[in-house]
Each structure stands twice: as C-alpha cells, then as structure tokens.
Length: 163
Image (cartoon, rainbow, N blue to C red; front, top):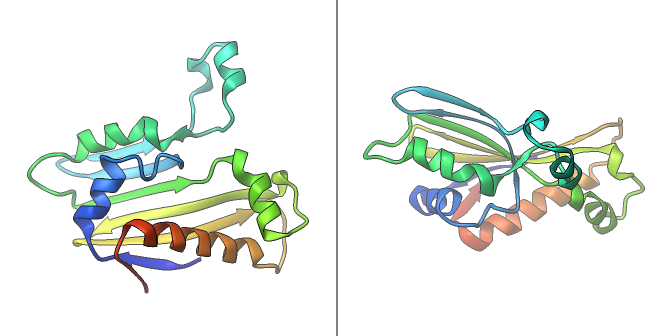
C-alpha cells in the first residue's frame, strides 16, 4: 500500500471524469458530498439483466466507464464537492496476467482484489493503493507489483508525489 498526493487537481479531475484514462478500471463504491450526499454502489444488480446478458458479465462490479458520467453530473457546477471518495479496482479478467507477471504460485481465486482509493477533501486529492488476498501469506509480491503498476500508470498522466 502506498499513499500518493496529486499536485494538479484540475488535471486529475479532467482525466477522472471527462476522459477515458480510468475506463479500464471497475467501480466498486463511492461517496460524493455536494449540496447533498450521494452514495454509489458499483455492484452489478444481476436481477436487471436477462440470462444472455448475465452470461456475458465477467465481473461483479460495473466498469468505471459506465458510471463516470453519473459522477460528473453530480459534481459539475460552480462549486467543488466538499468531499469525495471513490474506490476503483482491477477486473478479475486481469488476475491471471498479474499472477504471471509476479511469478507467484497463486490461483485467480486466491486474489481478492487490487484497488485504487481516490479521496478528495480540503482541496487535496490523495490516492491509496490496496490489495486483498483470500488466503494468508507473508509474501508481499502482489502488493509491491500493484503499488509499482499504479505509480507507473499515474506518473504517465499526473504530477504526483508519495506521501
């Protein structure tokens, strides 16, 4: 787990809400506080889909690309939110690739998740990486891989610093 400060908030928010920069992620959950508080759950409502659509689903959470316009609509206006927390994550379809790149002997079922927490409050954006496993281990290879991957990804687009 690493904590990162974003130095250019406007650029980050532009990429987050108006560009496809984060569209490869899943949306897990979020809170946005503007004139009202909004809580968003990214878990797919399976009852909404027919059997053919359900068979095509690869994850239990909605892609960020399908929810970012809703977040943008909540936020847009002359005032910035007082607080915003979003949790994005890696799709399970990428787990075999992560295992291969890390050189670990886990199965995809052993991996719980790879996350990016986005916290905005008091004119500051803090990003926190996180991983979960469905088993106990002292091995930190996956944590280190995810931290490095996210830092590399974020450095491509943003002025960031570890805190």
